[in-house]
Image (tube, rainbow, N blue to C red):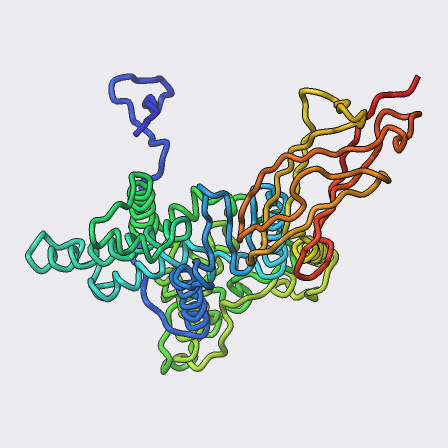
Amino acid sequence: MSKIPVKDVTPSGSKSDKNPETVSLYQKREKIYVREVEGFFQKLRTWSLWALMLGYFGTAWINLGDRQAVLFDLPARQFHIFNVTFWPQDFMLLSWALIICAFGLFTITNFAGRVWCGYTCPQSAWSFIFMWIEERTEGTRNQRIKLDKAPMSPEKLRKKALKHTAWLIVAFWTGVTFVGYFTPIRELVVDIFTFGDVGAWGIFWIGFFTVATYLNAGWMREQVCIYMCPYARFQSVMYDNDTLAVSYDYNRGEPRGKRSKKAKAESNTEQLGDCVDCSMCVQVCPTGIDIRDGLQYQCIGCALCIDACDDIMEKLDKPKGLIRYTTENELEGKKTHILRPRLFGYAGAMILMMGGLGYAILDRTPFELDIERDRGRLYQITVNDTIQNAYTLKMMNMSQEPHTYILSVDGLDGIQLLGDTEYDLSVNELKETTINLEIDPDEVKTSASKTDIEFVITNKETGEEVTREESRFIAPRAI
């Protein structure tokens, strides 16, 4: 660890180099022992966590026909998401989707703070799973503190080994599932447990995500949220005085002090606020902060402190909500404006982009046609004195069913297509072919050497036009 030497300064002001002190550039992590709590927001998180886990671990096992429903096939450059297949040329759609996600995050942050972090962020989700395992294997918060302070013993070794084994199992299955979105998971799992050919890259990525999950959710936890996550650093720019955030009502809670529920009102307790300084809000916080110190960037909006404080208030026969989701304006006695220009701006931009993306996907042609003229020669004069142009066509059936397509040419009267005009393409098949276009010189406009033409693809089964691409037919200019 890097350290900076700091010279000692004597009371008289003279400097002494004999006993230099050192100041660490990095703060040493203090382990946080999170107390388990029950309440409304904890139940809400449990349901959201179940939904996320079922979605992540379950979606990979869904099949549509003979293929996996969600599969990112990198070697084939095909990205299957249920009934839609995307290709590298659809990268712009992915960019749109990422921008929409960003504006969605801006919208929810401006409205309700870091609820994404508290309820749906993968780092938080897996950290809560690991904390749940820790609670079941090592005991309650006080028992874990006592266990860590105790010397090594067979019982301590058993509990630690059980915990880390469970962590590694969850981390390993997380890595397997992640790789299962890039290679068929049913085959992958069979290969893993039968020591089949998983492949070097498969082994590497499973190991990488196993280690990353184990370290991030098991050992680093709040360090990821506080120091590594960029969202923690810039989320405050999306806050305003009307943003709902987990906040402590200092007007009601201060001055804080301990008191008994059955104690009679006395002169020294009548002036105390509702906060009994029990520190439960600190003990349940996964990032180890004290919400009573005000809004802090370390707060992930998980609302565990709300559940803990409400439980204490209920036991003391006091109204709940000393810690609650509220706004700065409400805490200051001002009116809160839920509907405001910034929120409308974020939401409006997100909705417009969602509409544009939806239209682009629905209007997306499930067929791609690339046309390339013969670069070796502009045109050819045949023995019959006709003019020929050569083209290379690449056709790709991007739909989920095999089709027969018919090729034709528009834009120039009398033009003839030499080559196959009917093509059978299976699902996601790419076919390359070379064709020639021929025309009598009398049919060509002699005033121009280039004439615009269009290659038209029609579905033989339905008779509907699938796509058309523009090209050029080149002929010698008349003198």
